[in-house]
Image 1 (cartoon, rainbow over the protein chains, first blue to last red):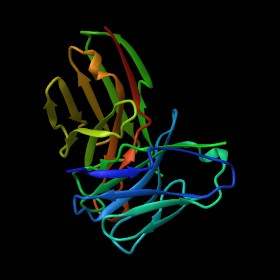
Image 2: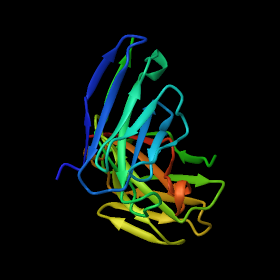
Image 3: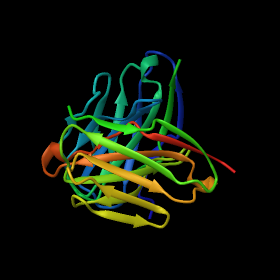
Image 4: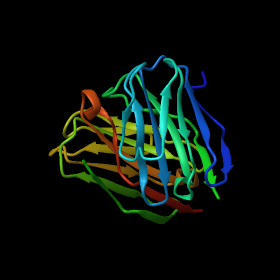
Length: 114
Length: 113
């Protein structure tokens, strides 16, 4: 009964390096989301996937790519990390886009780009 | 895009005090949600509100869906140290990409024993 699992929990990258943040959910949810959280900025949507096979940009998509690998998994890729991408990243899922029952969040990945 | 104004940004209170925070929007929502985020964790849903004027409680927490559908309030009674965290409001309309949650910037609550 894990809910939403994110890996890794912590990561330090050098500017220009690439990495992929992994997210998996075991609730048979259709929709998945990636957010970043910065002090004083709240949660900002990077990308979302309404259903398997679809992805759409959110509020702050620049510098990121996503892949909805299957119904369970939604990954976030930084191709060339920049210090401005230092943040805490959260993956979330919901039964469907517009589900009135809110989102279930993972515990986050704390990323530092030096 | 839609914006939510959440206030206050932070609160420092004494254990046992009551807490009030609110969220306002320039546009209406069909659903209001309140989340709590503890240090090092992701947000967890506390209360969901689905009807204008609705008042819902979860233990010491009470939330209200504003009658205009443009605001919501969260009250915590008799605060305790484990109430520490960041509280987020979120508004939602149903259907398609417009069904995505819009989050406030959070209210950081500190409780002094």
